[in-house]
Length: 440
Image (cartoon, rainbow, N blue to C red; front, side):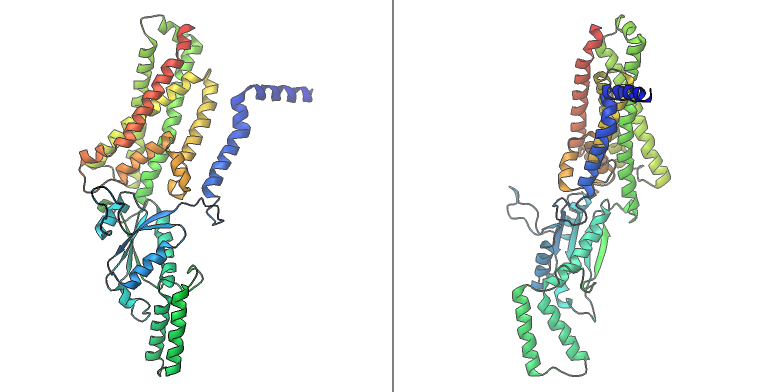
């Protein structure tokens, strides 16, 4: 009898394809996603680690500063740009300025900027009296950029001009060591320096050599209101990421009332009146959209009151309102589409769980996108979460500080456009799929 019970249980599970998928395939999908995200972070040569774009600002203009930029560009994991991309108006753009590089990092178009100060070459390798610090301007919404670029900058400093390092180190020994070098010693040192320079010697990566060759000063590209506290950017990130994920769950659950009405016969009675299916779906969509907007508002207001999220400014409020309406409307349409695809409330629960969790993992709601490989950024553009998250981050982090409230809202056009287009597609599919209820 036990065997019979087990066989019946397996038969029931096999018939329920959604339950079968949740049991066996969904865990494999999530394992694969997180393996792709974190599998190459150990430097195993998989080539999936994201390359950071770094802007180089050379205010020194010496051979040593240029050599430092070349050595930095040779570090794995960095793409170094000395000039803006050429355009029709500026085929040969001028090198980056400090302010221009700051705006690029502040706008999320580069992970960091390295600013080499005037006089750097004169003090390079002077351990007795280091020169002005190299400034690393970093995107504080990507905390890894600060440490990655600063560490690789130290490695590049050892590689930039090893012969100069040796000559100046020996000069200090000559000056402070209690006696000068002989003529033959000086000639031998000159030969060794020439050999090092021609062979491109120096520390291979800087990790095993002495640290702190150059002084680094880090600057977070942030709003003055943030007061240098990086945690505010992460509050905005997770308010958006978690908020969008649970908004999708809420909307799919709310749209399940369509299936409840179908099972109880309420839907047939409604359609027997003058109410048309398009009106029914439209009314449901508007109501669920308002609920979705309210849910997003509650999430961000809580973030502002409990965790100091900078929300209550005219510019932020306008941008947030635009994104909240676009996200709530699209999420409501998404939930209604899922409800019209499914045949029962139980099926909707299983399907929505699968789809929303996968989109959330790929879109950045679960894991910040700055730790994902580069190809995952492309994948995120095919998810609801990815576009919604990008829009909210534009409002709370990547906005132009010099832009006004209206200009900032207009800057959300790509994200709002995609979400609005998705909303129309979802509603169109829902209307087409709902025809089976009219025939019934």
